[in-house]
Length: 63
Length: 394
Image (cartoon, rainbow over all chains, first blue to last red; front, side):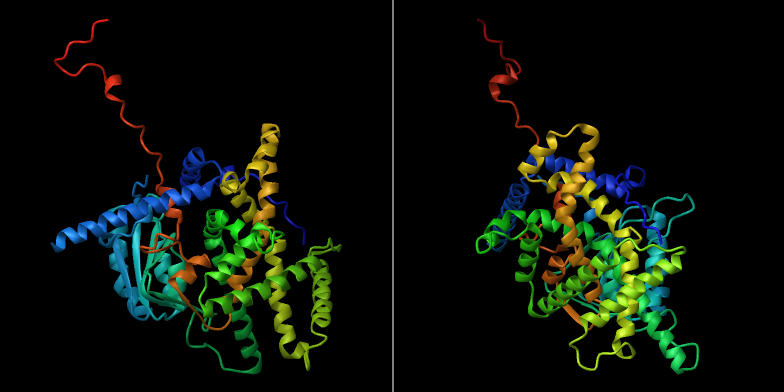
């Protein structure tokens, strides 16, 4: 059995899903470069703020 | 800043509910609803799952229906699967088939190998020959399921690997020689429940075995026909089995040896076909820029443009290959025994994308929904005079 030569270019196989993911990765890369840890930290900070807001809103509702 | 994207958000108004055993009655019940949703728009369809599993053929029918195109050959609707409480057996397979998979925090997911194929009633008398045939078909079904699963989870583990890198220096403190792949796997192992840890250990053992087999099988065997090359590979596998089972008491080919040989042969054929290599290249292209560290990036920046992509692929392959090897073994380990996993286990093992409401577990959605913050509004001095106010005279 002959081993197939691995493809290095997948331009012709790019699906809309792949393109959407590529664009998303580009957006993150533009802001954070390869410092992905900073991206994760920012996301988690943002979620923590949202959580706090939701909790305080819940407190207001109870009053 | 996170802008919600419907492709990653479940929608109860465009949903079907897989509750209870998966059987022909369920297919009958869901069909009109799926067709209606598909006719309304090509927006994602959410599949809520709470099921003990059931018939693989019925699950396949539901999936085929969900993935169907329309008269205008439009792309199938994207499928978001959500386990609310329990997804076992065929329901776990359905869950994993989603384009985006979410688990509620207290939900559980059970994976195991195939027990039936196409028709539940075996359509022939049970004899020694047909029993062997059933065994072979179940093995092939498991092999196919493992390969398909690997294709579904690769973006997840790639993303987990990249998003976890910030924690590697801490893991390396005790052993500075650890590679990124080793740090990643150590981090996963430390995040799992006890049953999932056993699954992880099985996968690690399998990975060691596959690596040893791969070293033997990848040699350039020569032969006049495909069959003669296959024969040489099989002989090499036979020698490997004999040598690695030397110390196992009563080990024979008639016992478990021949079964193992068959499984290895099919597994390695997939690797030899180049499928895995192509998938790794694809992952390198997709995620490459995020995977390089500053030193790699500086080196690649020196390379002329046409050769850059190839260089990135070469560099990122070194990172991905061992991780891909582990997840390949994991997909096979999931086909053995009963593997009951929590939502968090499933997240770390790449079987789901997101645990609902858990902000410590970042997901693909966060990358997809990320948008740069808009520029801050100009300071009042830059705005010019307010309406009705005379400009300042110099």
